[in-house]
Length: 68
Image (cartoon, rainbow, N blue to C red; front, top):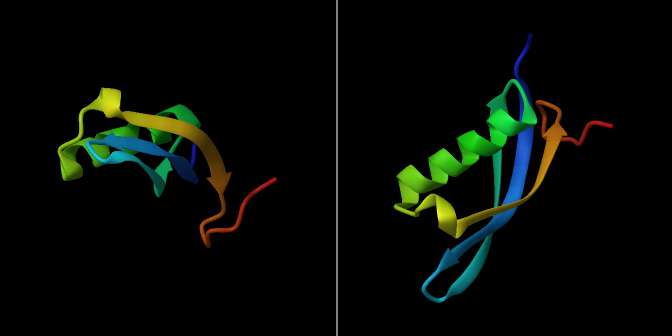
C-alpha cells in the first residue's frame, strides 16, 4: 500500500486564543495522517494534545492539488 499525502486543518488553543493551522503530511491512511500532525505540532511547539483540535483531513495529490 502506497503512502498518500493528506492536508490536516484545525486550531491550536493558546493563551491568547485559538490559532488556525494547516499541515501536509505523508501517511498510509487519514487517521495515521491526523495522528502524525498532532504529534508533530506537539513536539515542535510544546503543545499538549488536548489543545490541538483537528477539523478536517483531506487527501491531496503530491503536487498539493485536492483529489476527488
